[in-house]
Length: 499
Image 1 (tube, rainbow, N blue to C red):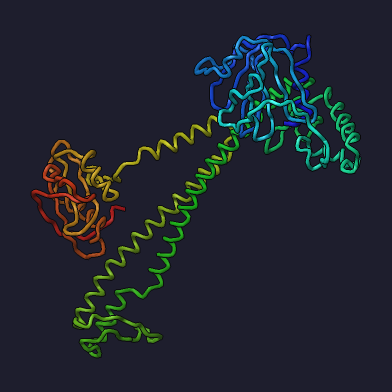
Image 2 (image 1 turned 135 degrees about the vertical axis):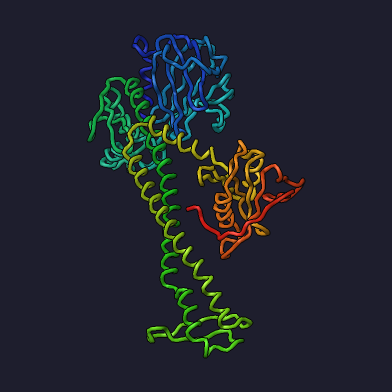
């Protein structure tokens, strides 16, 4: 807050006979409802001082409009005391309220280090906000211009500094500097104040700016309106910016997944197919000797060569069969990656639309509503992902610890449990709380999913065990995901994604 506006506020509060004067008035209540708001209720008016980002903002609400609940008294010995005088400090951002029993409230309004401090017999009692640095002793120290240059006058607005620069302020004597500041201040003490709006904030000025909102002839009304609009405007933009930052961070994460999926597709498309290598081996078996580790074979169009790695212990036919098996998995990978890429692209577009929609919101309540909804979505994370197969709900554990939580809290004893045999992987549950007969075809489909979500996903055939949930138990002290199976059945399936 500007030093001239602070002095003007002190003048209005201390001018006897004026509507907003508190001289001779009793301080009925002094309380806080949060760590950054303090309320002083005098006979004619109430003052609410909000410390927003360290700076003090003055409001003058009607006493009956002040918050009724959660009031915490502060500076208790001042309640019931009457104001004797207000001490002003020219060119300084400070004023003191002196009470009839000698107690003093000092308003130190030094930008982001603002505080209100209570003194008794010139000794510090307490400060608000409570974490403010302590100013131990009370001193009536007036601002001195000795050896001060224009850049030292932190209490001035930029345009005020410009008007003094025209006078060659730095080269004036101390007396002339003092006179120049008095003349500058006197021109402002009774001047109309204008509340202006810019994109970034609301400002209180001595003239109309690009978007004027209102004008005031007394400083208390001006500060009241400026404080309410400034704080709400800043809270709105900060809340919006914080939430937009989270959304853009999420978009960036999806973008990385998108690039990774696109890169994988390019790699799969560029690579020589396993089937082509198997066909070349079969077409050139007559020149492949057992024990070879590598062969270069001409492509079928005769325009190039393909380097093919061989298992030296296998026959040419067995090596070809190995590549035919790999070609099946390669085809599955391509199908899976294409589906994954399409899903990530859709997520990316959806997130872009969410950001564009959020950017258009101009209501703080709506922003907070969306932010709360997003946080609630994150809070309800389940330890499994859920799909449907043949009308049955299938639950797939997300990780080792999630597998334990899935078994413990999200299954019933008649559910069917499946897991790839002898390898690590997800626990998969076919929900069956009413103990219906599950068709073997359904079990095989879900077994393929269990194999896919395990270390056996790249095999052409994988063994999967299954049993009812009641035959699964967790040994004491076992590592996450490890269980004991008391009875089981086994099915051989081809690993297949549920996607």
